[in-house]
Image (tube, rainbow, N blue to C red; front, top):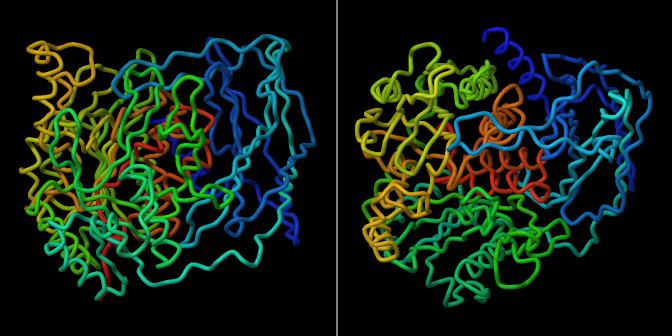
Length: 628
């Protein structure tokens, strides 16, 4: 394991470099950006069955079902918002032929974090074809970077192509990228700067939120509290939209354009309802069916993605059939998905929870700065996919990769791993968590009520934390930002009402252990999901939690850090290292980094991974607190 871990560490250090490319030369004129890349020679590794190809400049590896695991080199260009991209070309040169003694490794199918085995290898691509058939691809999107909305162009290079019939690789030494563009017209409006933060909440929560508004303004962040009735009654902007969620999204769009809003805090979770859920503030469900058995889940990314790459309103209903975020069979809405505003949610169901969160946010931002405890990172993990013959402990690799991003910033690590004997059950996690930390990263398996993982190469379970354990977290004001890899830990639609719904739909069979969504054993009936329970503890817990609202996905084995959920997890810490200091900006940059590497409209799993990565916390929160 030690040798494998060293190899992964080296890979993460390489991938941590922005762009991860050999020293490029760039030429910029009024119409083109041209970049020349010089690439290293490939390294071929062999086992008893396959060859694997390694390229030091690779930022990820292709994981397309039915394809091969060839390296990808991604280069991201940014332009002013609404720049028109007229052409993208890549010219490769210095082609060499590398023979293989064994077939190239196939891409591994994505594995849901409810499954503990290895991913299945895809069916082999057609013999005689070259893979990938194109030497590059690209996609465009509008999103926020360093506080400004820009146009992203993510160019994905495939400098290594495989010819399976001949058992050879075609490897390029040089790549010349040319992006031709037209700058936006002068009439594109500049966003004003009136309210940095907009808080959207029901009228019932308004008075309790006033101390938070006062605090934010005192910290230099101009803040506006808006109630749902203000939106519906067109108090500030004309109300428009086909349902409550779209109406709120149009309001956010107007706030961005007319108030210069950068952060939006949604305060409100579920407010009852049985057959039809009720919410304090609107939510959006995604309708994506990836054959996992889960065809719908919550996303707040919908409210953050305001524009497409051309500056149009990103409706998430491109076929205009009234069904939002649809990807079922051939019915597919084309989405931008890059955040244009930083959105987080306090999924409060009552005034007491609002009061708790307001108190915690104010305390964190005014007392954390300069504290020794903040510079501590806790990683809680084990062997996520303990398949026979797999020497990699995926969760431990992910938490280690996260810490590598923080180490140069002066953080110290406390690794609660099953392999080092420090993670033995919930008591060990509670004890370490209660000492305080700036960040905690759980990487393993979850459901709405619990989180756990496996010991090395063993499919037995080591329990981490359950919802019933949260009150035992006694870390006081020393509260971390928590990142969670696993399924459903942030499924914030859980409610006791779901028991009534389950009985009405399935009778007493609801309490039998059966494989249908909504069964009692899925724990969707708990009053607060795992993440929200941790955030709302009054004597400790977390200041914020980022986790999945639906099924999590991973890549078992050697490629775990460059694919699927484990990749997204450690990219959060890269975003922080790269200078994103407010929580919403760090969360959004994490998602953007992931989508740059894994285009969301090219793969259902990658699309879902980005959509379900929910921030339950204040997006304007200054990580580490204010200095005065």
